[in-house]
Image 1 (cartoon, helix red, strand yellow):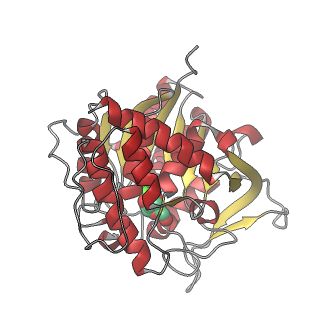
Image 2 (cartoon, protein in one colour):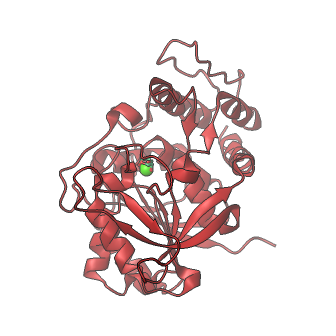
Length: 345
Ligand code: RIB
Ligand code: CA
């Protein structure tokens, strides 16, 4: 008996970990990818769109609408981070240029039209800045009630930021959008509160070289895929399997970045974890809180603040992931993405 399918709209700033989140979803039979909407973040929005079209084509994925969205944040000037994700946003990977075409629709239209056509069915997964969703709820105030639920990779609560001492990247790029979204999704039933995957837990999702080696073995790729800290930076994979080859080139860049910032030769898989939670919230331990975003702080603009104990007298408006089993996440990821890659040998 096949698991019931889960209709998803995914809003991304692809990005190396956004790429792995897409592979995870493509490798998950229960995921029904309705649309991929692209926003500026790790790299510019048009490059984000190209990256998604290219990964879809590489994986012979079924047709799915890829739409361009906001190319700049609502108020803040755009910042991108090629240092973290590479000049094209996919590390050292050089994907074949896609022949698939971008949707003629804007990302906001994709969100609103699909939510109206399939009320209370669609899960929104956001792994980039919240600009598109913020603009969509401004245009359609009913959107929070038309969607089944949203899962957001973003924020840092009892945990240091990765962009400023108090802010996480997706929120820091567009804090005004984040506040619009958290406010707009504040009056929902408890079982439909946004699920937030913040750095507190996503920085425990550490991809190590042995995970890549295991993935390659499951994919039947040869030779063994060995990423070693002593490799020459920028070494390219010779994996026989094209998904493994490009995935390895992407994550190698990410591991070199994490090492440069004394985090070790590893890569935090923020977005694939959020994707796995979107498909199975049972993977996460959730705790309700009232979340708001600091917009006026000179040092803290973009900080996500959680009121766990009702001090503000406001209803909880989010379920924050407070724990998970990283080994179970990697078991699923290696099993699923390895099988997807093997099917494309
Ligand atoms: O802070 C991590 C998040 O910011 C991830 O989604 C990464 O892709 C970047 O968008
Ligand atoms: Ca991202």
